[in-house]
Image (tube, rainbow, N blue to C red; front, side, top):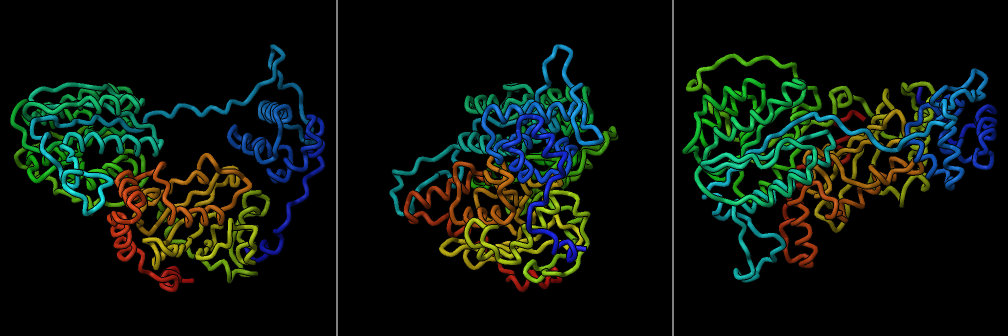
Length: 550
């Protein structure tokens, strides 16, 4: 029970003699106490749980110098190769035949492709016309001569740079290919995981000619077919961006037939107010989505939305269903896919129903309260309980500063899941709002950072539309010496001080920079963020506690 466990945490447990003896035998005696403190290892076998990244975290936190660090790497490598004896001593049979000891590589494996997207971009003559909201960093009141318009083609390039960045940030193993079309079809880039090549090719696109939408769709299906033949479990998608009607090339029926052979999904992004009816039928028949954008800002927000970037995210993280051949259809009887405005794009779900239904309690009232938890044998569990105890006792050591404005509610039966409320910081567009967040703590915590997401939508460049947070402390700057409360306080600071250099939403970053560079004269960011706060963050702390039953 949590209440019983609560009283037993608060100090680092003493390590078994075998751990100390083993570290001393590896020439790490003077560092043994620090290594045991950092890892919370109770037996030599516990070191087998360390992967390469965790190992480097221990080295950093224990402040091991070059020689000691390499001794520790070799010791753990040997241990992983042959394992420890029952008495906790180490067998030296793990040396390789050539006498060299195995080493651990810190390189991450190349991620296998999970989704291939063939992007078809309209470069017909109409793409040379201006698009609304074309300027960035423009202070209201300036003369029109200071405003340089972007054409639709220039805007499309900017939007797909943002799309590329968003794909890269997800790290899910995307490959992108690029086809441009007018009355002719030109394959500019075959499918590749090298996303830097994609940006370079997009930059070279030029407007010209007529509009052969369906020929481009068929060419994209041909591009994807090789991946389909190799692995039918990979998500295959064709993303068409166009501003007009098809007026040349092959028929829509032939294009749909080509797509159906490989089971690809077709999404369409319509720039302007003249969507092609047959393109919408193709989208409908393949289970895709049809979006409409009328401004550059809408384009940025759409192409950075997680459900647009990733089919898997659109499914809520579920695997792709097994391939089934689609039956022939009467094309003329197909319904046109309804058009989704950017404001109506659904957020990609991040929290499973299992956690969404958890009962939580206010950490400040836990004390000796009971609640189910796993055995205290797991070091991560003891660490989490210790952090919660320090929060409940209002210990300053657990925070970066004071923790003011942050309310924590751990789940009664899953101590690795917390709900959190953060009060919008003063002198920010979020002031007066209450933002709900979810925290998932991994089994190998504190060697891996917690996963923290916003449940309440927030208009902020470092938070994705689905609630993911771009914060170095939750990524490459994570260290076991940090804590979940410190991460939450860093998020509170980030709300007031956006990091535009590491943005997940480029358009909001541009508006934020405009606000900063104009000393507040450009109010677009502030107004939009304030309106979003008023609309989405109006629940009080008491309202949330009532909703959560605590």
